[in-house]
Image (cartoon, rainbow over all chains, first blue to last red; front, top):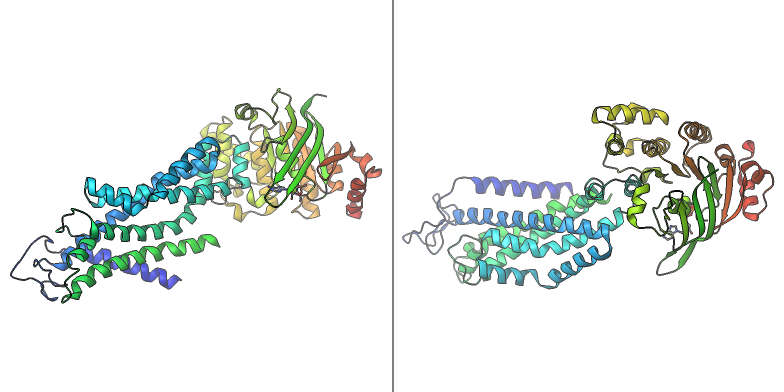
Amino acid sequence: MRIRLMVAAGILGVMILAFSLPHGDPSAVDLTAVLQPPSQAHPLGTDDLGRDVWALMAVGFWRTLTVVVTASLTSVLIGVPLGLIAGYSRGAVNAIIMTATDLTMIIPTFVAALLVTAVVGLTPFSAGLVLGLFGAGTYVNQTRALTLSIRSYDYVRAEVLLATPTVQILLRHVLPGVAGPLMRYFGSSASGTILAYAGLAFIGLGVDTTVPDWGTMLYRHRSQIDHPLLLLWPTLGIFLLAIVFHILADPALRKEGQ
Amino acid sequence: MTVMLSLRDVRKAYRSASRDVNALDGVDLDLPSDHALALVGESGCGKTTLGELTVGLQRPDAGQIMHASGVDLANCRPRSLRSLRPRLQMVFQNPFASFAPHLRLHQSLAPVARRQGIAQPMIISALVDSLEQVGLSAAHLDRYPAQLSGGQLQRASLARALLCDPQYIVADEISSALDVAAQDELTRLLGRLRAQRHFTLLFITHDLGLARQVADDVCVMDAGRIVERGRADQVLDDPQTRAAKRLVDAIPRFRY
Ligand SMILES: Nc1ncnc2c1ncn2[C@@H]1O[C@H](COP(=O)(O)OP(=O)(O)OP(=O)(O)O)[C@@H](O)[C@H]1O
Ligand SMILES: [Mg+2]
């Protein structure tokens, strides 16, 4: 398991380093050099507009990472506090939060994201925000379930007797117990976000197909049967990044469970 | 002798899908102020449940738990209950669950002292004092719960309760994890503390011998009811009920 973790961290580190290297302008069109194979000047070749595929991949990587960070932050910052409150208060507050959560959960996240981004435009930030918002429901549920069990621990009940303010009990005593197990979910939701964003870019209605997203690259080149490398690079990027996040969060869970 | 807590026909059942357990089945009990009462009974007879009800950690299904201030712990609003806190304290049965595992002892204790109005520069010395009162020392302040023994955690738990200037402490089998010598030390400690601090003590145990060392009176519980109450010696020498007789027979002989 250690090895899996190190390999995943290594892959992520290499990706971050490699895509931080200076690269060409991803929007520089050169119609005299379209569909070039990999070369010294273009390490991954060029696409049908003569753009440097490496530059497209690099920009796509940072855009994807922006989506993941935005979505995760949104989900965590909304889902965890609501889950803590719902789990600790029961009663009417719990009922309201859980009803709202159920409502967001029955709307398929991908469809919601498709609709919203079709209206406000697909940017890494807008996609991250919508995916994060609709992904928050699961964080509410998980946090609530963990809170319900932690609140019955004697050290939390002792704080009740000690007249510790509820906010302090939640932050100092309950939250640390919630954070570990939530990591498990964090990884798989990050992977889900990567795939969802690639999907949105792929079928995004009215999206500018010159924008360098991995999903957009797949969409543009889906018929370039003669140049399979053009499809391979973004596919590899999506696959690697998704699996890296999946693995990175996994051992955190294992350690927590012991 | 004023009564601090008075329980009338208190009932509590734990309901689950498979079965209901009548943990308390009509308990009447008066707890005088500045008094040590032992609650003895076999495992599962409802001692912990009764203890938790008397500090307001749980509510009964029926009955009254009247505090001297006029607050009925069984039926009052949460706000009235909060007005009695933190002066009703409990030391829990399982020492290893009594402190947050991710906090050092001083991190758990300092907020308690702060809320008692102790000024920031005095906090550490107040914590050291409270630990020394129960036979621990400043060296323990930096430890995590996992770095303390069960007995040390029980003492720390007692120190935490004492920081609150308690009117009442429930001590739930706080010596059951200890060897006999440590048990004797702990019961003497409780006696000293009570002499200094004058709190009412509900000493829960299944060891009648220990009960005699700590308490003035003994209540014997059986299957959710209090079946016998009397002076500790009297219950020991002349148990009236089957439950009390069984407990007397169970006392380690050399102490009896
Ligand atoms: N949270 C709970 N859910 C369901 N049943 C419970 C719960 N807590 C206690 N019980 C049941 O209620 C009864 C009384 O439990 P309680 O813990 O009060 O007994 P006790 O006298 O403290 O026992 P012990 O000496 O073993 O600590 C037992 O039969 C127990 O199984
Ligand atoms: Mg018990």
